[in-house]
Length: 346
Length: 281
Image (cartoon, rainbow over all chains, first blue to last red; front, side, top):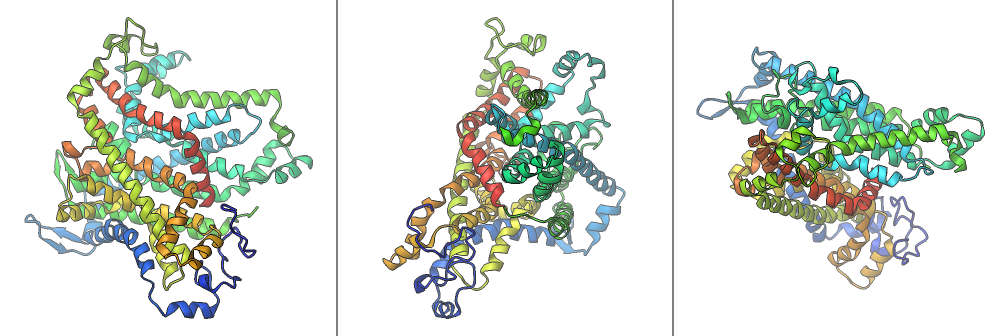
């Protein structure tokens, strides 16, 4: 135990049942589990001010700067403002405008589709490569794995702004580093100013983002793989299973819950992304909006730019759509993935 | 090791090392390239970008421009103030709430826990329109306090969630001993607090990096010269000096190096914090 003071035989590490069998009346109300009924009633009688004191600061800041703004934004998406700035209720008009209006619809659907592509690249490249690296790093006979782990996680700690600029310089035809680098492999004729081409800019930026954030799935998979008991792997190996079989039939199945968590984190992160495109392609997400993501559309709509005034109510509408998309994915994960996939305790 | 004999053949061993070396090189190359070129003359940056600076090509011109033309130290100071105060508030408020939720049984405990956990999955950015209005009405625009309050709200949900997992495991003996001695609940909380130190590493990792690296809220809530954070300052400087390669590379290096130094010093705690955090959740 942490302090060596605990001699209570009913303590268990899962913690949830602490206090269930204790005879000590002074702490009958502690723990989140159901306390014995008599002590529960005894404690209910007096108001415990300290609970309020403990909870108040967190609840206040959280409610005021997170929950209230979120709800208020959702509400604002049903309003519209006239030239004088007076807001009036318009029902779903903003949503209909965003999805069908000739000026708004191409931007909205374009950004949504770009976001889907952004997410697909992350799912196909970032997460599998993260899994590959994690499975290499758990191999305890490999020398220098701490160093590799530290280096591979390094880009994740940097700011997206810094990473975006650094890659913009590297990929710039002015500098020619990418071209020189490719020439080492005889590939210089395939060099293109990718960030400037409508066809490639989004994929290039997705890969830059993958380069930066690969550390996150890698670390999550790494912890998951570390937690798998050796006995399981050993038993399968003794039975003649190959390394490949052991990985896919045992380890991968056991870390499926983590695959789910990684997917949700990737999705939420991707559908909330803004900095990389803003930094490298500017507020208009060029060339010709080909790298526009929902986060960038949100910023442009709400805050405005050189060609257009900011529109808070339409901004709130874009934010509400992002909220619904993220919520849908989180619910899908909770009700479909989490229910189908078994978590094993070992 | 015997238990992993299936992949310990020499050929597969070489492939494993090569894969790791390749990806590590890929992770390091852009960073080293920027740092190394920031110490070179403009001519050398373009003539031989892959070479390290030599006495002939060495130049600090870019750093000169950055220090003269931007308030680097002011930006840096703002970032430190915002990050540290937010982190302190997140840890204090988060630990208090987590303690109340895991230690006391009261009506609505479970629902309050769920309410506070909502923010783990929903990005606070989506409430920006209303956050800006709130800050305007409170007179907080272009103050560091606005950033601190927003980041505290952003960091609390996950912190409370992680801390609860740790607090629930604190043996009851210590708390009981305190109560028998007549200690107040506040005193018991501060006695217990040092015992969740392992959770602090985890919480610091998950909350500090996004705060330090954020561009969105400084851009919207505090873009004035006096309140710019390092990332916003860098973003604006880089946009302005985009053709001055010496300055751009130096500015990037000055944003990267402090983070790398901190990362190297704390990488062990950081990674064990990440590991602990993800096992818990």
